[in-house]
Image 1 (cartoon, rainbow, N blue to C red):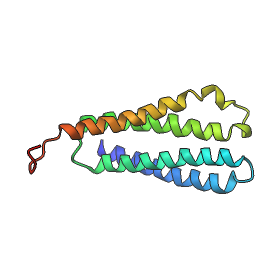
Image 2: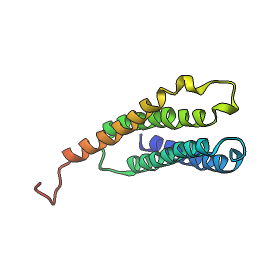
Image 3: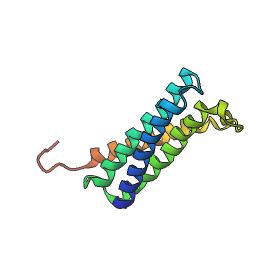
Length: 133
């Protein structure tokens, strides 16, 4: 599972850099400044969570069962949150109306929040060898 998480993290990180460059250069003349900022938000959150996946895939502090849960929450969260933001920001450039699926953006955000919550609860349950708290 760790290898799968690390590979997925690397792919999401690579794509975040590609999308970031695309947004900063290719989209500059095609969409409004507000839409560019929206697109950048999608890129930023994708990169944040790619880095989170790198941590999850390389740490021994999270059990494999939780890693699997976190993996699916984060992957689906990135796809729904960042993916829908990319579509909404570039909506005027396509024939598909991404506003119809805009409702998935908060669902994706909720999945990302849930992933952080799962990690917090897992860390709170963790027993410390040096600390009696």
